[in-house]
Length: 505
Ligand SMILES: Nc1ncnc2c1ncn2[C@@H]1O[C@H](COP(=O)(O)OP(=O)(O)OP(=O)(O)O)[C@@H](O)[C@H]1O
Image (cartoon, rainbow, N blue to C red; front, side, top):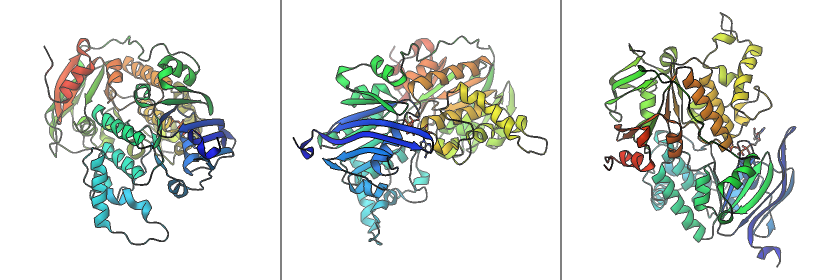
């Protein structure tokens, strides 16, 4: 059999890559067949995205060989990668906010020798492409005005607007609810049938066992093995990933919950009415989960509380005292913390160091009365948190932009855990975070609750929200539709409330 008849469409052989003195990939092999879904998994910072960036032309390898359809390739940039049929949907959305959906999808077609495009036709094509994926988004809308779920769909449509041979999806479902995830899977199975090879990166192991044919595991820049999915199991895969067995994904909670609420909202209604009549309270030490489908108003409720969105009416109170929260700075002053779901836009400052990001919410302990920051104090302040959250970095001085996605998420979290909040709202706490680090984040949530903080966790991850909450509120159409005490937790009950149905008696 000569190379061009190989059973593999893609072979990445012995790939190594360093950034400066940091070695990120060492002698990595990845072999992907025609028309298969190949999962690529590993802890945060293991090198998954870097390997895919070498494949697509963003980075150049130091050594090794990439063979596509029997021919060695060396794309120098993403445009060359695209011409070879390699399309990547990155974890960090790369859309241009001020352009329309259609312009974003077809922008790359404006090559060096093309200055004019028929935008009317392109808008129509973009609409059809999105519809063919089973979603409904106005192709003429500005990307800035889309929800994060819609932005992710546009990213996927953009990747498919080319003649794609290899489609790489880097954690595509982190913003999706179960219905959207299923739609994506249907599309992937269709593409697979059409012969497209799909490389699927995810920290959700259940997704891998649902749709992937093969799985390759990376650990600290080395591939620790590939397995046929039907011949392996979760325990084996976790062991390849973290080098040990994992006992409790959801650590047991030993936290005393107060009698009285520490935080409450009454009849909270947004100026645009998209969220209306939301009333609930959280007790000190309690972890309150908020579930619901995308667009049900979970994140919008958090933003209203935090003063990031304007409210029409409603009362917010801490320890029984009514507050007037007009803006996020005001919310922080009243000891309300908020970890946003949109890491890139609102969660971290990418050009700043880890240390500055963590201390930005609270400069007082590390600055003098004129506001000068003592950088040694700042560094000392963050070292503990870096350690606690296992943020993979040589030092707190590293620029956040250069961290892996999951480690950026940990920085976003550490930023808020470093201040003394009375209530903290965490929107999708483990988005993009590997299974080992998830446990560390859950432990930290328990620790924060133990200090008497009321913790509100918004999550689309059903096992997670059931695993860490004391009580779950379910939102539907902008308001709270139902409340589940621990003994009523089940995926079915959450889903029923999410779609506006009552529980079966
Ligand atoms: N441009 C860069 N400069 C310096 N270091 C980098 C750069 N890009 C990535 N790294 C480092 O390379 C390592 C691997 O990162 P990568 O993004 O490939 O990990 P990952 O497996 O995709 O992680 P995650 O699951 O968190 O997304 C990390 O330690 C990261 O900090």
